[in-house]
Length: 418
Image (cartoon, rainbow, N blue to C red; front, side, top):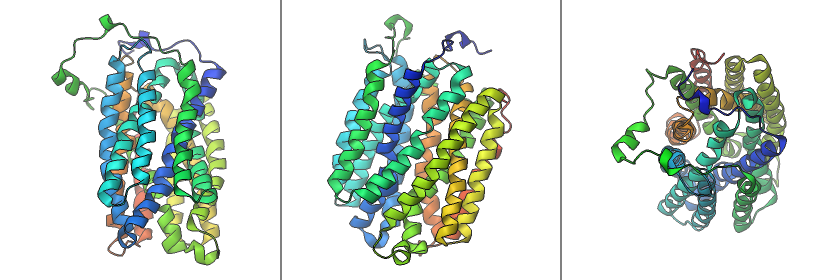
C-alpha cells in the first residue's frame, strides 16, 4: 500500500458528475483535435504549399515542447494552489480563456514563425487548462469506478476528432467560423463542470514552503523506485506517437496518395477525412465503453490495453499496403476499435500506478508528457520516413505500426495492476 493511500477517494461519483466531466473532456478535444488534424495542415499549406510537411513538422515540434513544459508545471502548480476557488478550477478557467485568444493568433498567422508563435501560446494555455481537468480523475474517482469513468472520458478523443472533421473539415469553409466553433466548444463544454465541481480549497498550512530547486527536483519520478509508472509512461508514449503520426498526416495521405479529389470529383480531401473519422468514431466509442467496463469487472487492465495496441498496429500495417479507398475505410474501422479500447483502459491503468495520490497533478503532468512529447517526435519521424519526396507513406505507416506494437509490449511488465 502506498503511504498516502488514505488520501485516495472512496466515495463513488454520481451520474451528473460523470456527465459533466465527459462533456468537459469532449469540449476540450473538439477544440484541440480539429486544430491538429485540419486547421494546422491547411494553414501550413496556405503559408508554403511546396514545403507544407516541413512547415507542419516545425510547428508541431515547437508546440509540443511548449505543451510538455506546460504539462509539467501546470499539474505541480495546481497541486499547490490555495485559491478559495479550489486547486484545479482556477487553472481550467485561465487556460481556456488563453487558448481561445491563441486561436486568433493562429488564424492571423502569415509566416511560419508567426504560426509557431501562435501554436506555442495555444499549447501553453490549453495544457494549463487540460492538466487541471485531468487531475480531477484521481482527486474524485475511486479505483472501483476508474474503468467506467475512463471509458466515458475517452469519448472526448473520437468525438472531438469526428466533430472536428465533419464540422471543420466538411460543413464550414470560412476560416473565422471554424476557429469560432472550436473556441466555443472549449468554453461551453467546460462551463457546467467548472461551475458544479466540488474543488475544496487547499489550506495554506498543508502546502510546504516553496523552494525552486526542490520543486524542479520533484518533477522527476525515478523509474527505479516506481517501475510500474515508468512502464506505463513508456507504453503510452509509443502508442501515442503512432496515433499522432496517423492523426497529423492522414489528410496529406488522402491528398497525395489516395488522391481523394480525383476519385470523387467535386469533393475535398477534408471531406474524406470527415468520413473516415465519423465511421471510426462509432466503433471507437463502442469499444471504449466495452473495454473500460469489462476491465473494471475483470480487474484486468493490461490484457485489454495490449490487445488494443496490437489492433492499432494491425490497422496501420493495412494502411501501408494499400491506397484503395474501400480498404482504407475498413481498416479505419479496425483502427477506431483499437484506439477506443486503448485510450479508455490506459487512462484507468495510469491513474492506478501514480507514485503519489497527494501529488496527483504533478505525476499526471509527467504522464501527460507521453501525450505531448509524441507531438514533438512524430514530425521528425514523419519527415524522415516520408523521405525527400515527402511521399513514402508505406515506410511511414509501418514505422507507426511498430511503435504501437512496442507500446503494447511495454505495459506487460507492470506488476501493480493486472
